[in-house]
Length: 381
Image (cartoon, rainbow, N blue to C red; front, top):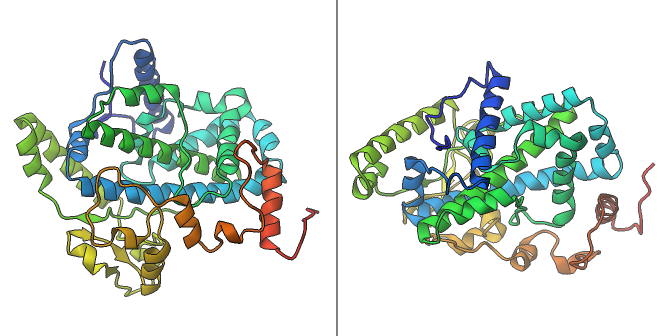
């Protein structure tokens, strides 16, 4: 059987038939991963435009993954900061699990919709997430959602934005093993894992906001620009006429989706789009990166300096004017910690023993003590 990963997969309109649209996704996920588990299919049907992307220049995919790692790291940090007091002192777990089941399912559906409409390609990331169905998230009084928050809060309580928490799933892990061990296969695995982590994190964030009757405006940032061989010309070198025809179709569709989303240029450091900056602000371009065909923009000299010294997941000084290679490592936790406002050596409370997991309540107490360093402990009234 074939699993619909391509741009052209027809589904009900999510804006006017949200339930039917979600049902379409859940049916595909169930059928595909069930067949994979039973051995009826050996892998996944990778669409041509994705093949063209991962087989293209290393610099383009490495820059895309670098940017996405930062986005996911910041998103998970936002979840961690917002969820910690809710879990520690506001009894979020019991409130969520006592919620009317119908209401809980409505919030999950809303989260799927909000996540999927956050950017032109975000919906397609759901294909890597067999657990992203209403039934699985809502099962056992919504236990999955609480487990997700607890994992983000406790697993990396002092995580920096360079560190992303992934979410293991045996079927997804099995799927990765079918993608091969050559350079293209390894790129595809990193691409799939990054997209999966982004989608699950975004759904968790959207459930959290919806539960508290909150929303968050979003805008689409244009991808950073990299000079490269024209994708259609590269397709002619790599594949058949059908391959070229599909690449042309996908390129046209992507441009259309990007235009429809009203995408804007953004600052590489703070992610602010031009529509959120003072009128007349001209984004600055790194001249050394421009010299190698890579366009990195900043909203101010201050942002450029911050990114140079302590940008995450890599300080810009590490990559400035240098081509990005396959699997280029991110900055180490030790280096990132030294570059941060509160290096580990300056912390009042050191990192815990690896075998000890701090509870949300303890983590919240630690956070408050760090905020009020003159105190020995904090009492919540």
